[in-house]
Image (cartoon, rainbow, N blue to C red; front, top):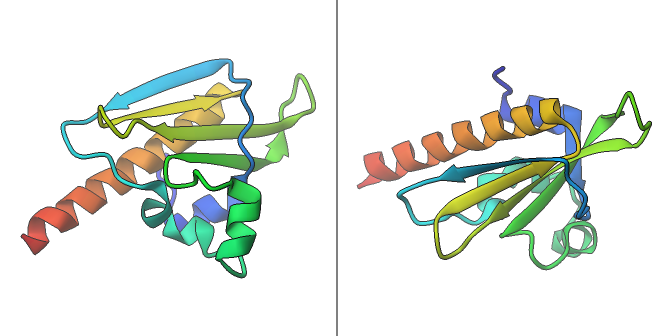
Length: 125
């Protein structure tokens, strides 16, 4: 499933991190880990200013980003969320969620954004 940057914003928004996750996936790269704020700049543009963004996402937004979907889990009725955690030392991105479909959407978006970032970086020299 291919989600454009704008479409991602329409189905999810940044939220404070939740620690409960039934599903986990780790993406390993051979590149220096990227900060999440520039990588998901369009998501952070939803906030009026940096203080509003920090109030919601916390001071660790560059290494931890939680997205809450506009839908609720069919079994529990709780909001569906998905988090991305960046390991600064290993270049790994941990994606975890309360829902496997939510995890899949974020994993796809993250992979697409990383590929585009590194492709642009290579082209810029």
